[in-house]
Length: 534
Image 1 (cartoon, one colour):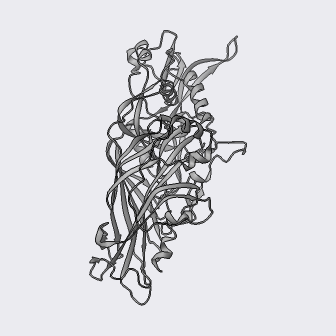
Image 2 (cartoon, rainbow, N blue to C red; image 1 turned 90 degrees about the vertical axis):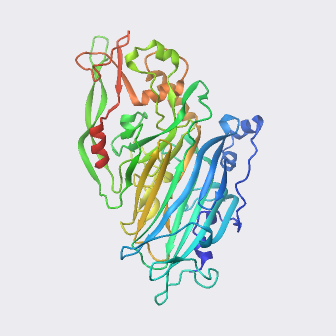
């Protein structure tokens, strides 16, 4: 197969627009004025087409100083990532030999880019979702591996078939290191309430002979601190940190409100650095009965009608889908703060001065990476497509074949023949390592196909939910500030009327009005460890 035919399957060619045979760097963007931003807010097509991403590209395998133009903050360039690094690419032979493939100049075959292009919706190929590309590139590297395992550059890359498959040819490998930069769309999470700009750092690897597996890694590192600790009437911590979440898979549950006990099975809001198996190609569907405890408010009859009277923890099962691993996503963002006046009015034992994690649809300076979405019944009446194409995973494959993307709700957004491990290096940096097994000869293996996204805007539905829940389910302290912080707090914690016979948090003192609160999901270290290992 010749190189030009192979490249037609890459992200840059999905738009059908001319591809430039060089890359001179990401375009420097000029911030839009206030009038242009007002006009933009009511024009969906212009929002999609608006260029967002800027960065520097100092070496072949590294991008630095990644920023996103934020239209809700006067189009300023918000720091998103300190760096993206591609590496640890290798091929493993059936005799156990591992051959590292350096992403360096001697092996570079071609560099291409697009300044601006539109990817149409499609039902075939790797890149089926509509999107607006800008400042995107790929580098293509070629390797020839001798019978002794030595890796050398391909001598004549532009003559004949670059991946010969005749009588005992030398093993050749092509690696496409790519970065796709997308405009903002409401096509990231299931409800379509979050306007997010996708960032698609990925690797594509293809061989001309059968090998045991191929591997690659991508390391994403956020800036250590956010430059803006205030957004509207909300305040955030300066430090940026991670949170790991696992989605609920109970299709009998309708998540009419985005409380954590409904959306998640478990989570780790301040994870310690370590290695996590997040996609496991050989894992079957499995469950654990009564594995988690969720908060349930007790309602009792009275002469005045039904009245709340305390709360209890009840148990529910945890179901993991085939190939699902320890966690489903990572958010890297600052945390929010409950307003100081609310903290001062609360009992000190309530510890409302603790930072508040933003989930779901983390919207304030939040960088999302989801490799799987849950399969909840978002619409019991079937009126809406609540598991839209962009949250569906790969299916129809096996442990040794990739299958089809965007085809099954609840499945990992990762080809079926891949294992993925997430190495949390520190609170703001992780390395994504994917290994594809039994890659078919002449067929690309795509690593980190799903990419990541940076949150820019919450639509009217999200703001309406936030306004209502921020009032009804926030800490029971009167304040008009910190509406988003109070909203996120209420998603994780539930309040209840104190009843000594139904009190799930007995060590917490009640407020003067007799109100207490407890975490909607009760998780301890032992429970978390068991659920991760399930």
